[in-house]
Image (cartoon, rainbow, N blue to C red; front, side, top):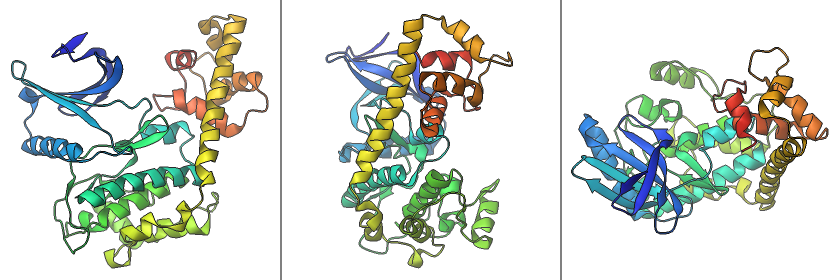
Length: 362
């Protein structure tokens, strides 16, 4: 274990994330034995001055924000001998929203999507109060901890005046979620984040982006030339469709404002949250059933895997894995079946290898 000032500790085997100049580990606050996330930056390897300013800005902003839907900074420690920075942050026990969507079969139903958006907007409302604009809203930057969403990654965030007509020029963010004004290298307002929310809402519901291209230039052309299309094979309410459509208005003047978003009628129904919790609980119940069956039978995992691997390629397709699920419960809903399969398919290739399969029983 690596010790940090005898306050925190972590092992390099517990890597949970990695960036260009940083690594994030699952660590411990030694005094309480609580898990923390330890972000380690090796300054000797940092050559990008924008990364340095972005890191400093992110720390400053996180220290100014304290909200249950925003990832919390706990401590920051500099080691002058190793020229390293240790950023100690709240540990999130689940993955990010991208992984959650993938494990749910590549898309979410309307009710679950509403919960995600509701919690995201609660976090963004706190940013509005403190006058910050995030500028990189996307599923990868939304973490999940004990069923609560946590907005993260404030490296592109900036002070913003929501009451006036402040404009920004920096071309920052992730292209697929960028407002067209940013793609055009034009000035943009605080409504740029609203576009990103619209893209994310569409992606959650339909399992794809509203516009797809190989590069930012082609993406802008697609946005300009192709009308927003709602696939007919997935049914959503008119209210939710209206929400997405008005987030994705090309001209900022036609796009929703922040009050329109936060007070939208799709967030008025409270039963939605309870329904989502029930689905998550059913998923965990089914996983527990699988574990109990294997424990009761005592079949070695290697043998069980081989029995399911009908074509002998040492990988399980969903259909092969489904045999086990239906043996456990022949009435198991298909969304629960897919939820279990994709939760453990960390390689995201639609095939379970033995290591992924064995994690189900941990």
